[in-house]
Image 1 (cartoon, rainbow over the protein chains, first blue to last red):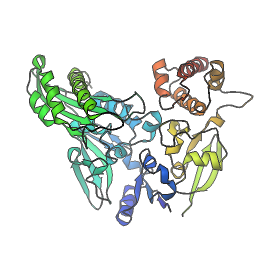
Image 2 (tube, rainbow over the protein chains, first blue to last red):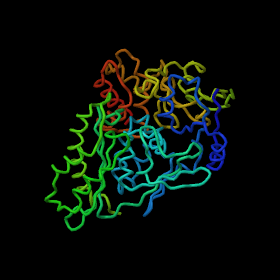
Image 3 (cartoon, one colour):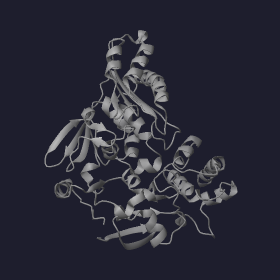
Image 4 (tube, chains in turn cyan, green):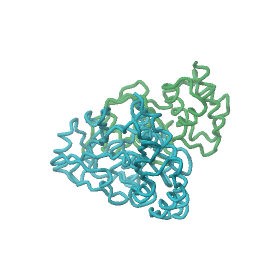
Length: 286
Length: 156
């Protein structure tokens, strides 16, 4: 028996979740309806949050806030985001195909907690924080949000309502690259997002996050430590690749072998790093 | 089970329905409204055979619950043209032999329409991207891309 509730405001949605904790939240439905394809007649109770206007907004500026219901297509097509956070738009543009991008949402991409989620690596290197709303409202760094495939820190009565991050500085640049079986409809075999801070021709800082090479989207802290502070013309790229390959823990699955993923992650990272360095300044005007 | 009242417009005609919470738009179209031009391929959002245009956006109708469609405007392949007056995309698909087994054709047509509605003069790369969520099992993509390109030129 599928009960179906479609509140028009966040406060009604939150109140309902406190009382009905087995209810599944549906937004774009592009993961939920796949997971329940074989048992549509036994769908759990649903709360459709698609009518909650306050979750559909994008606020730009020094502090950026993206509502959980913003779709991949809206992120990919957003001129300000394209200019200031191209890596995020690159991630959004590579989710599924047009049909999935028109329905699938930012919040859904994160709460589904796939290690291959295309928005997780770019948001993680941006230092994003997710806002969870339940009996109270809490902010959780995205880096602490994922606990395993399909698992997050969220409580059953919480709704992911927003993602927040600061606008990158003028001396920062980012990139996201994804390796899949084909260009459309592919779940990442490996993916990597990089954001760099360049100062005085040096890599003053960098953040690296990989998808599909560990149980959760993975920050490559040791590789960051190795390359941090290096001169741009003397970057130890080969050593960086080796460190990165040592730092990840990929598995064999239908999309690729662990060995393939380890091999591919190195050059994929190198390309993303060089693209991110190239993007410094280019994307920050205005 | 609580039935949900849903009012939606399909190909310009308004319907007042009472649906189950788990009913997919695909099933509503095919089983309630008899609009069987929209096909079910994979049922899990991979193949695009069930593509329709929902409020101007291309979606997989297997990935949408009808309960989510209150007030929505849906376009299916049946709304494109008539036997007497085909839509330019339909005519182009005939002219360019862009149909083999035909199962993906409704999805391809709706993907192409959604693209041209937003971008009347797409490049070939944009056409390929616009169609990328629909699989053709016969692999006749070249003719399909050529047909969409020709239809775009005609509408110009």
